[in-house]
Image (cartoon, rainbow, N blue to C red; front, side, top):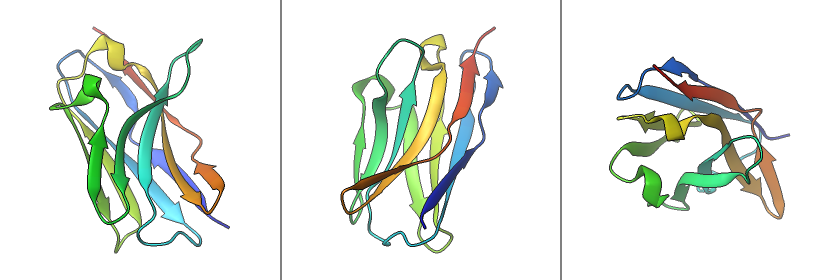
Length: 115
């Protein structure tokens, strides 16, 4: 059974940095798309960044130049380095992959950007 577990969220001041991690366990193909999403109350979950298949990177316009997604296949880990954080980045961040037609989500980690 595939499982994702996020870590690294917290409270940070505007302009600060955080690094989120996502540990994948179970049967997850090595070249599965791995993605980070985020959600704030009352809004739809939105894509933040993704590593597609063999390595194509995709970012939401709002985070381009500030966030970097990376993957360590040897450790089954995915990371999201977040720099120059803004209050608008406050959200619960989720890691996601898929097994065939099934989406696999982590439980989420809260990121709060506030002075």
